[in-house]
Image: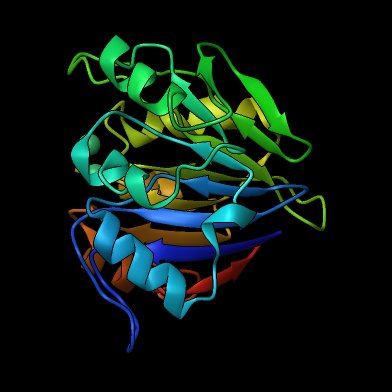
Length: 220
Ligand SMILES: [Zn+2]
Ligand SMILES: [Zn+2]
């Protein structure tokens, strides 16, 4: 499947960078993972990338932080199903429900469409609940974990993604993750958004680290 970064702290020329994260997966259905912080910036980047909101069939939101759900106004439409961690506030769920085909509340691991799985809602001591996705690679090598901010800890997210297959790669915000040797076994590393040790990861794994920014396309 094709994954396009639509919103990130960095961007290719012609696209806007901003603190937040969003990417579009073209699997059996078109799935937008997170929406960035600003609906204006999300709209403009989508326009540049020729993505129409009506073509998005599913939106999956990692967690209820502004830099991941702030762009919702730009992408909600009456035919889109929205997958959210069950712990989302009632107010947010209601506001989505009113402008979408429906809300699917995620608790445990599940399939969203063939080849796209959710880890389910994960949580650690910090108390921020978050879902990540696991994407099957085209060649059957394994799965690529897709994270929002990785608040539950990248170690825990990778372990949860691994139940869907051997870990092939990881894409998204890694937050403060610093146990870098854990990435050794992966074939593809795409540190985005809030990853604190981005430069160090790119240096250490220069042969398999992919630069992340709005406009980047990754074949999975
Ligand atoms: Zn967050
Ligand atoms: Zn974030």
